[in-house]
Length: 246
Image (cartoon, rainbow, N blue to C red):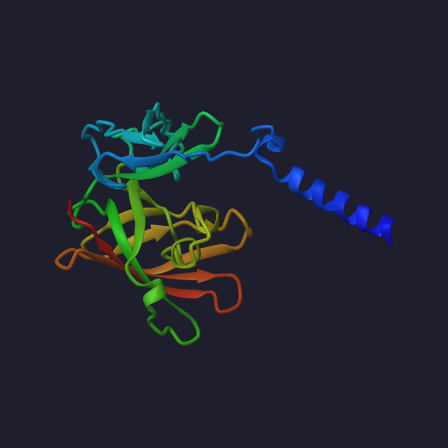
């Protein structure tokens, strides 16, 4: 019985010793993660040919300011390096900072560069997108006014569109630009009479194809409507684009 009592005392002593401040070896301590605050808005709309002045950001950890690393990456749809204000595209600018313990903080800014066409001689522009899908074509807030679909010029009378089904998957479901039907080139034979020839688009992830039909421009309302016909079940999408004025 005496041995049992001694054993219990030893165990309790060991537990108390392991919980003492000296036993931590100063391994456990508080770290302050970097908090990054952008200067200006996290969304910038820029007219093609304008100038982009990097607004920068401020990073703080535990009251101390940290250096911020800025990386402009490359354009989402056309692959240009940095924010090229002479080329229509979506550019993602990343801001990062590291605290003294090596922990990172990050923030993002999206810069859209676009040329706004008059929709009588030029259909370029940045557009919000509303999409309805077969078989019911029922409107849904999830797929209304999505930001953004981009149309840019590839030649004198030719254009490319970033989303051949209006961004149903990557914008509506939020699963990223790899799920945008890409590569459709629109040749404007006569914009005012809605005479267009359009090449086929393809989803880079799945490989499925999309044909754009019924492409109609309404210059007075600043809208474009079309149908995207995919080669898969319920693959017909009715799309309305509304040109953003900025």
